[in-house]
Image (cartoon, rainbow, N blue to C red; front, side, top):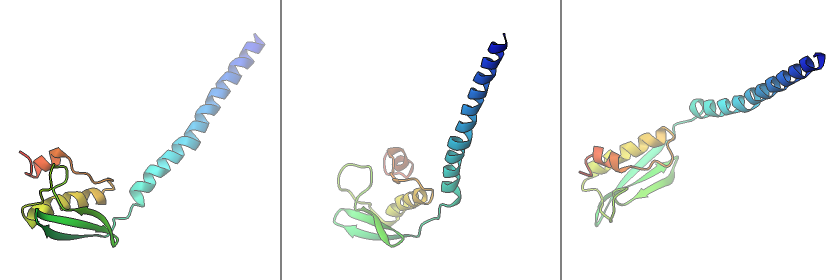
Length: 121
């Protein structure tokens, strides 16, 4: 009977040790990475240059002075159709910049977002 109590305490101690190790070494590391991304993320300096092609308007997005996106056509749509106006290109650029500022990489544009912006029916 005495040995059963010792074995039970050893098992309990082992389980507690494993759970403590997991919490202090794995969870704490994961939490610090999550907090680092939220607290220490600096919003980049974004510049946009619009240009016109034979197919319509396009744009370039620069992050901290380096070209990040060259978009001569409407993203996510088949073909080489550019935007009809600079203002319509700006709608998509605003959404892309919002995603970049929120650290959503890549800042892809979905069909649903194009539909919400009025590019798809």
